[in-house]
Length: 127
Image (tube, rainbow, N blue to C red; front, side, top):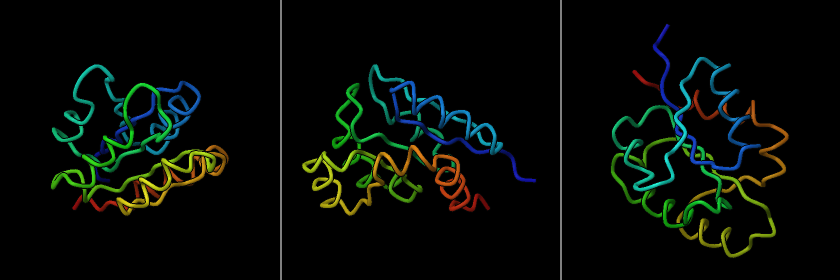
């Protein structure tokens, strides 16, 4: 059995962060919650792991700027990425689409966290 990989959790909201962390642990992966006081992506670059989950509505950081850095970074861009936000956030959705990123509606993410995290971590073959 392959050793667990890190799933980077770029979510500060307790509700979603707790559920993503619990799901990640249940899938025998290692959740790495971002430190929101500095370079959020430094830990991801240091150990890319199996993917990134990013809340595009997070108020602790500029999520679109983080998303831009992810898609342009040679280490981060290949990682599976799961982003979510409310359909009402039209400007955020447009900016994400312009970067080529598909965004999951917040309600869909909330109702299917287990399935979505499972699909994300299984999409990356560590071999």
